[in-house]
Each structure stands twice: as structure tokens, then as C-alpha cells.
Image (spheres, rainbow, N blue to C red):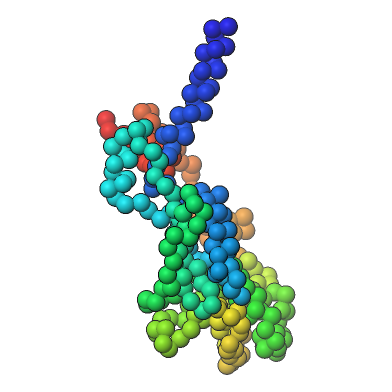
Length: 260
């Protein structure tokens, strides 16, 4: 009976300690917190815009004095309030918001008017690629070159920076041919390119300047299962041995050195 009570006590203790030890005011947002921040922003007036895209959602860091006060005695102080900082794009403008998880409200909001646009996100790049590949002029260019549209892939590239007054939020899409090789980068379809406006998701410019031959697919496969020596090095096994363990400990998102 005593053993059973002791086991239950240890299980309860183990389930309680990680919740204290792993928490830190500077821990990154959890997936649930990111989803909650996005839902709060979508429920605001910005969610009514025709196109709303998220470009950054991260922790709105508490002040340094507050963090130091908490670190001085984390078991005495209450956990600091968690907030999210988000950068979104809507109505052709960049918006910066702070979301409070305690009230589920946006407590700070402003339109960014400084230099530059927010970083690209995967969704808009994928949409830009799809628009560029399906663009009628691109389909005609591929057909003119005697290539199969089903074997064409594309990728996005920036066009350089010249200032907001001279350019919109536009990205360049270049085309590649994959038939016969997984290494598309050595098989560009030269002479054609598309420019896609990411705010309106539309091909705003398409160029077909010259026809160049597509490089041959022979000997372009870089996979280790295909490439054999001497074109790929054969390495001998490597074993790492630390008899006294590693020189660091990982506690949640914090790394601490272990001093001898």
C-alpha cells in the first residue's frame, strides 16, 4: 500500500514539475496561441477585407524589467501575460497588431508606413507559381518550344528593391523543366518570365524574349541512390562518444551550459 501511494505521489509530482520548469516568459508562441491570434485578427475589421495574408505571428516580448523580476523568483511571481505580435497585409497596406490572449482582443494596431514590404509567405508564393504556370501566354510559350506543360515547374524570385514609390509588391516567376531528372535547377527554360502582383494575385507582366535549348537531363540526377563513386564520396561511419554526457542541458526552450 505504501509503495502504491509513493508511486502515485511521484506521478503527480512529475506531471506538475514540467509545467513550472518548462515555462519561460520568452518561450515562443505555441501552435494553439498562433491559431488563436490569427482567429482574433480574422474576427476584427481586417477580416472583412477582400484579401488578408499573415506574414509574421510571434511573441510580443514583455519588458526586460518584468522578465528579470520574474526570473528572480519564478515560483513567487505570477506568469507574465502572453501577447502576440503580428504583421498582416490587407487592402494593399501592411498592418502591425498586438493581440492579448488574456482578453482575446487586439490591444495595439497601426499601419506600417516605413520602408519595405513584409516577408513573403508560402501561400502567396504557391499561388503566384500556379498563376504563372497556367497563364495563357506561358502555356503558349511552352507549346512553342515543344515542351510538355505537365513537366514544367516554376519558382519565385525577388526583382530587387527600388522603393515603394517605384514598385509594388511584385515577384518574379521563372520556369524549369523536370522531365527525366529531379534536378530542375540545371534545366531552366530560358527566355520566359512572369511578374505577379502579390496584393491582387494577378500576372501583371509576361515576357517571352528568346528561345534557348533546354539543357539535357542526362547525368543531372544528384540523388545518392543514383550517383555512384567517384562522383559521390564514400564516407566511413562516425561515432561520437561523451562518457560524462553533454556539456549543456535543454530545459524547454532554454539551453544551459554545464560547468565542470
